[in-house]
Every structure is written in C-alpha cells, then in structure tokens.
Image 1 (tube, rainbow, N blue to C red):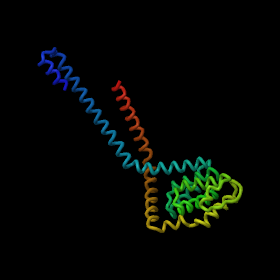
Image 2 (cartoon, one colour):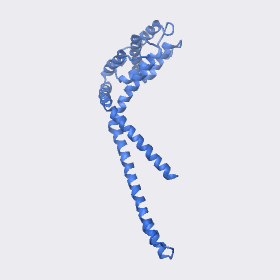
Image 3 (cartoon, rainbow, N blue to C red):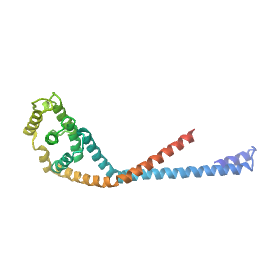
Image 4 (tube, rainbow, N blue to C red):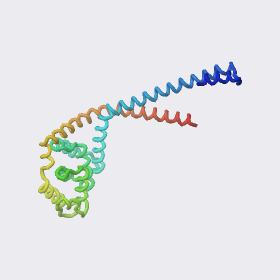
Length: 243
C-alpha cells in the first residue's frame, strides 16, 4: 500500500524522492514482517493454552479440586486428618458422592465439631439426608453443621428433631439418630440403580484423573507461569503500540 501511494504521488506530479522512497518501502516491509511474526506468536500462544486446557488441564482441575477440599478440612479442623480422608474415600465407594465433595462436607461440619468420630457420624447422616431429599451435599452439610453449632434446628422442615445443648454429644447423637430413623440407608441404596452405577464409575475415573493430575502438577505450574509471562509481555507490547 505504501509503495502504491508513492507511485500515485509521482504520477500526479507530487514531490517524489527516489532516495527516500526505497527506504520507506523497506521500513513498510519490515513493519509488515514484524506484525506477521507477532501474529504467529499469538497463534502459538493461543494454541498452547488451548492444548493445556483441553488435555492436561482437565486432569489438573480434578487434582486441584481434591487439594482444595483437603485444605478446607485442614483449616477447619486445625490439622490434617488421614482418618477423615480415608473415611471420605470409603464412603465414595458405597455412595454416589465423590470423595472431594464428601471432604468439603466434612470441612463444614468440622467448623462446629472437632472430634473426628463425631464428624464421621455427622457426615454419614448428611449423605443420607442429601440422597433422600435430592440436595446438594454441601447444602445438606451446611444445614447439619448449623443445627449442631447453634440453638436453631435448621432441619426441622425435613422432620428431623434435635435435642441437647449446642455442641454437645447428646445433640449430635439426637441429630444422627433422627436422620437415621427417617432417611437411613438412602445414600447406599441409590448406588444399586443404573444411575448410581454410572456415577460411581465416573467417581473412580475421577480418582484416576486426580492421581495423574498430581504427577503432572509441577509441569503444568511451570507452563502456567510461562504463559502468564508471555501474555503479560504481549499485553505490554500492545499498550506501548497504542501509545
């Protein structure tokens, strides 16, 4: 375009400098080549980010969710509990709930209950409640934890009666017994359906993804830092170009 404009200038009698024109054309071509190179780098960056997200990214996401759930439980309990983590894994094998979801429910309960055996009992009751009422497990755990940690029975609308002082063993036993009488065995019974079998298969595949994701995590963290730096540099380039 620059070269054509110079020709038009010469034809119309404008001032045309034979010495300057070739330099202008050269600069124009250099600029064009620079943008072509930049475009290639942008396409490469986009392709790399998409590849990581669609393949390795899905595996890493599974591990990240598991890691986050365990961190929530550790923070609520004040320590890492292999007893509760193993309990979550065992419950996944006999229910439709994934262990990362169960661990998140344990973390909500652990905000009010610190004894591990009591958390296990409350968690099992929460799974039955969620399965019977078709509730999100974290929503059910929130209701159970609030009932245990306050004087209000948040489960009264579901026909669950609770007695005993806030935070007491009697209150926990009353809650778990009441849920067992009304909804006991629901979480395990639902695995005997086709839907339950499919979900359990998906949970097992999710566990495999978590193991693979954990082994790939250091590599992906390095890739994420690389793409972050590349995106920041490109962003700075366009800002300077705009100025």
